[in-house]
Length: 445
Image 1 (cartoon, rainbow, N blue to C red):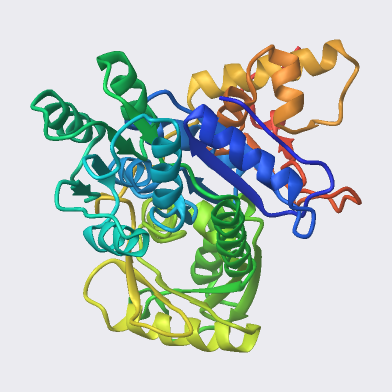
Image 2: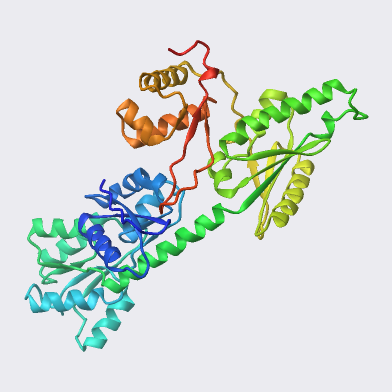
């Protein structure tokens, strides 16, 4: 994986996933386009089948993914949903007539007897009509989601071997390489600079929209169910006050991981305020309810949980009230999310519907934290505040491994993510973590 970062670019980071020559060209266009700066993180593959794996290597560092074409995009999506918006370089435009012209000028093939992949029948018909060339012996294999690069290769090689074409035009770099090895004359369709600029702008808009969405206020109402309420609430109801305090402590433990604030709403409920981005991170991209599983396990009750977000704090609160009402009326152990528009979303206690048990802190995570604290102590650093770069430097590991280590410590309750620092430099600030070594069962050396 190669990284291409442009200093002075704005805070939207675009992940470019493609073959080396395509990624290099996009990076060149991004450098040339000074009107709208870009920050790029690039992931290069040799085969389109690796697109998903390469994209997921960088997905934690970017706001949006830009794939080199529809084929790698579909390959990546087929392996599972992507946690950030994604788009791809479109086929069509001036790429086909340019490829025909290059092939004709170089004498690579007869433009009236070629095979063309990825382009639509309509684009080919219109291009040949504009050029005034007969296309009766031109063979076209449009792109479809089920098509893979091997099918394109077979299409071209069979037509050439049987003499029905004099060469091929392809959009897929790996197919072009295979055609070279097979001795089939060919020309690769490459995107015009204007197409690349437009794709970068589209990706940037998608990334900006996602960041705006993630920055919206999310309000969570956590309310004790009617079955847990005493007949009469007063300071003398010690067991009920203890229940509320226990609920508050449980909420705080999870809220810290989402950079959220927990406030008492009324005698029976709490208000948790965070952002949609933090909420997504704390709920596996809204595939499970916040707080529900931990409260069920720790308190033995199922609270009513409603989540609301909107264009304003007032709208978010109103939607949260509607959502908690839906949770109260439901016979299932579900939380509900209500947004500015659309139907409510029901969230289970855990992904897959199973309620996870709250296990004691694993020995492995305790040993990991003790090791990190020891390394810090060796450098006379007692701040207990670190980021992924610091962990990577201390343990001599990659940034990816360092981030995974910090997430494991957070999940084990041995570290808290801190609010991002306000930096003057451009770009996303690193996430800092407070290490909680006081939770270790034995003192760290």
